[in-house]
Image (cartoon, rainbow, N blue to C red; front, side, top):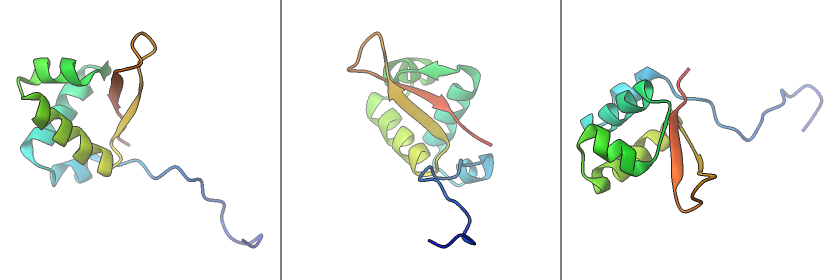
Length: 88
């Protein structure tokens, strides 16, 4: 890496709503649920969206591929992950 090359972080660019537009309807619904609720677990998303847990997992994976969600471990229960929408 030379001095003239721009510094790039390992963090990928955030996705946009245009990226979500091309996803399946279940992923769009999960994105909207996360838009209205800041941080949720998979179970909370399933309850709020009325989607099966497996469909929610699929939607979250698709949203993660587009870099529009952020996931982290829950401090209160390390077995669970918390998801939030991260769209530019």
